[in-house]
Length: 526
Image (tube, rainbow, N blue to C red; front, side):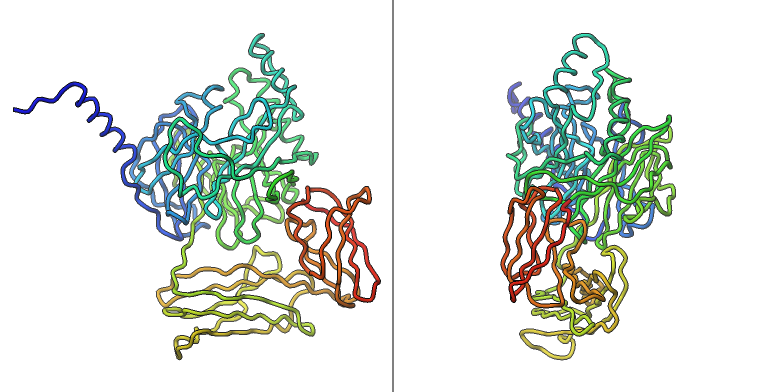
């Protein structure tokens, strides 16, 4: 008869519990869109469902069996590096200020198993900072999320409110917002209870746009009026996602107005550091469905979708800001409510294909598109797609893969568009294999103008890259000045200027031509 000591039994029990929480995580399939949600509001039991879909325009998800997570989970994103889901959680089971000050990064499998990766770091620029766990996503293997820091006046107001029990009367001057990111989260090891890693980067979010200042103040007013039960307040940045077609960060801001909750999308660029100006998308303020968004996600073509806490599902027009085709999803609710998030699909390279180059250039009023490949085994065709706004795409041409008929080391393709639009023209390749798997190339753009003598700058406003076009002669040098006349950047003989080191502001660009003449134009960087 074998005896087991109490100590050994305790160790075995702990090991079993650890195994259950850290069991093998089942990977998600490529080209799969995911919802992670629980029925009910923030005080509901933490019983979650994973929903999967291959059609982002549909509100129907295939739902997993219910499973339990220890904490509320939000801010999710799918990682192509390891085919797993990442999200943020409060460290406590109750909605308290203390619990919300510590937020962990979770790694979750398609089978509902999870790993606590450790605490997410904050920028450390303010005395009091916390992670907004509802707004996170994955992009190029990095986890992006938002944080808030209280300025000295905000800290003083919170301290006084805690002492007196009176409302803190917070204003937008009392908080600062940041976008932070951690690179290569697939390579992190679980470290529960300790900071997962140092920040890979962050920048401050500028909400000085009057529309957004008013929206955020409306949200803060609800916090002030409901203090100390601040988690009963609705509003603020509910989620973020990064548009794969242009690299811009989009968010959905909800705020109380007239007894209901309204919302609108916003956009900002992603500099390496410094400050990024947040701007509303279009002018539409959405009054339906009258509740917060639970999560947003993009498809590969740059179309945006939102799931609301009511269970409603809608597209988001990135020109007007309006919701489109709103329908009720099949994501479970309780009392007409849910909490959760969406994650956009990731793609892997399903083809033994290397795209060596893909480029487009204007030529005598036309646009010549060329691409060069190698390792085309199994590739069926290339579909060249075209857009004038980088959101809505149409097929321009399709060509069978040359490897279907012959074997070479490299393959070259070309197409000429005879009637491109005036302005910016966007092009991308949809590369399809014989089993219908596919992936997209990067997007290239060409600017055409009916006036070939003017200096043209695009896009307007600019993001991290500003493109120049001039039909008169070649540009030899570019100088950029701030509004005080100080030279802040010099570039030699280029048609694309890297603005990533410049803060969001208004600048003057001077282009000096080969004959010594020059042109100046004003532009704004987001």
